[in-house]
Image (cartoon, rainbow, N blue to C red; front, side, top):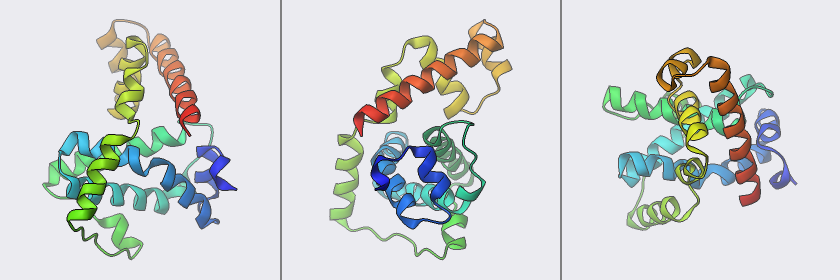
Length: 183
């Protein structure tokens, strides 16, 4: 039933329906692992960061508001934040997992191989971004993944903030369409 719901609907239903979170998790487990694998080249670290991201999503799903950034953009914003935080601290923060009383992840060689295969075999966020026109790709990456303000992006791209907003909007719409086609 939940497999055909939109990402926004899944996140909105998560506080009261565990199956909604499960569907969202299954949909994005591979792309989130791939996101971290590309950036860390370490399957154990990628798994730890992914677990922390999904724990944070679960813990904060009640605060998610539909109509803002799409759920997948919200998810990858959390991922970017967790990655930046772990780099600053030199370790993976595990506050969200502890709050949910989740045990630390212990991986064997077979698990590590599955992570590497899963991260490398899925259509990744980077692949989806690369399919966008360059102006949209740059705007989406700066605003959503890097969480930079529109004003700063507009200065860098030498255009108005409204042009940047339009590029981000169009890029996210195209990403949403690509993701729906792939599911």
